[in-house]
Image (cartoon, rainbow over all chains, first blue to last red; front, side, top):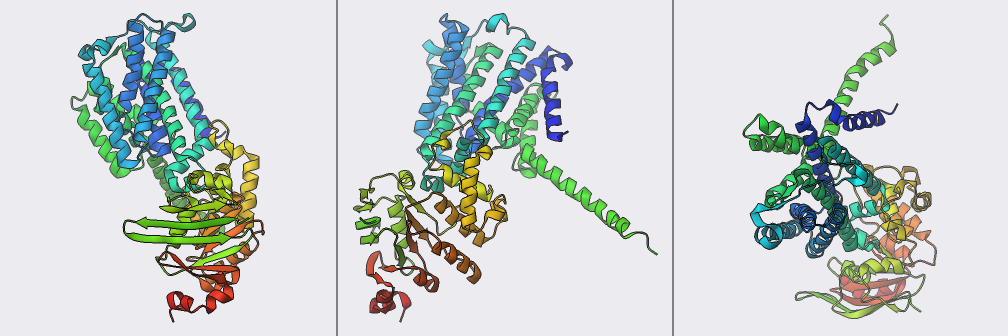
Amino acid sequence: MNPRLLALGIVFVALATVPYWMPGIYYINVASQVLFFAIFALGLNVLVGYAGLVSLGHAGLFGVAAYAAGFMLQLGYGHAVAIVVALVVGVAVMAIYAVLSLRSTGIGFIMITLALGEILWGLAYRWISLTGGDNGISVHTRPEPFGYSLSSPSTFYYTTLVIFLLSVAAITVFVRSPFGAALMGTRDQPRRMNALGYDVWAIRFWACLMSGLLTAVSGILFVYYTQFISPQTLALTSSAEVLLMVISGGAGTLLGPIVGAVLVVVVKTVVSGFIERWNFLLGAIFVAIVILMPEGLVPGSARLWRLAWRQMNNQTKPGAAKEALGPPP
Amino acid sequence: MSALTVTGLCKSFGGLHVTTDVNLNVAPGERRLIIGPNGAGKTTLFNLITGELTPDSGSIHLFGQDITKVPSRHRPHLGMARTYQIITLFAHDTIIHNVSLALLGLSPARWNPLIDIKRQRHLIEHALAALQRVGLGHIADRPLAQTSYGERRRVEIAMALAQNPKVLLLDEPFAGLSIDERRDVQQLLLAIPRDVTIVMIEHNMDVALEFAERITLLHFGEVIVEGNRAEVVADPRTREVYLGH
């Protein structure tokens, strides 16, 4: 059997049985957090990894979707309306982000997205009539699609898992598609892509919308998970955190952002229970990753694995050669 | 009707006039060579023709259609393809992926986010055919990082040919090639059918002169001499500015 398929099968079974083998409710909730932050990181990776556009304002988008859902629920609308509005608002705000920031690439793009994220944070903080300011917005219930209540940790986990798997599948298909190839082409040789007849701006714009959609999805899961949204969620540190997930795991890979999300969320929630200075630990881990595997954990580990494999083969080869020659006379 | 007409084209970078009132008239099927010393404005002229630079004044017509204001990304769709003097390829991908990108650039499928690019048999076949034309069919699946400089030059040409252009702009296709490689590239350029008009910038006189029918000599952004091979070579101004004696 294909070892890759086997590994995927084991991971899938492990994910599907999390509520049965996790030691407690707390850990099931941690697993849910890992999954929706992984969706967030996958969304950012569309830009950072595949488009080569680094955004430092994605927490703003994440928060806007969460606020939109919370606000609609506060107004008394149902969950379906709240979710649809949140998705539309998230993607629409991303479109505004894109129109403003795609005027440039590189540092310019980073700075414009950073500024836009800060503006959204400022609005959440100061536009008190809409957002409740520092008090935030509370969400009192979770949805019950087709009578399946999401109020228990395990049902919420399973819902998040399904959405996570759909997101992974969507990215997998996208990366192999002509549009995915075109997007990566604009990352590597934008001038050439233009000369080949591609509309570089439009390709980047659509990639932004896709990133915005995944970000909004994760923002909605977040607000239903914590049942609360406050300006802190939109802060620059949140944007930096998700960017670190993408970069530490490996930008431009499918698994990288997921591994990065596991790393950050586990250190933040679980390890922080044992080590008071968990921020320091996370920082040390990032420094180690940057020094040892600058390309990220997933591609870095793959590289080390190949290296080790080659060394092992080299060590066995001389012996094999001797045997082939036969015993000395 | 001319394949490519350039009329009164001017371009300055600050006070530096890189292109000054350039007029070109290239007939369909013609092989035109553009020569000139370093800094004569040859590549700038190409960048103006392909629209990567916007001219200060003047106009460009492709088969009678005014394309001066057409964005550069639309020009390949009108039948214009180019290669770069400085090799500009997708270094992380395979040779065939590079050519596939060139083919997709003109296909509406480039917007499709749902199909698998490796399963588009039509696309793969066309890309392979383009690679066979330049003699790289046997290493189509090789990563670009594992190819030689000469092979990369040919990938450049394959990408331009794959787009099935009516006007092909070659910017120093022989630059940096060994004598053998030059011979190969020359053979493949000679094999391009006559329904493709070729404008070529080249420093390497012996190969280029053999290929070209008409020659335009640029110097400080201006057309100094234009004519057939014998006329240009015999002209005293050519000797003065280009051949150096």
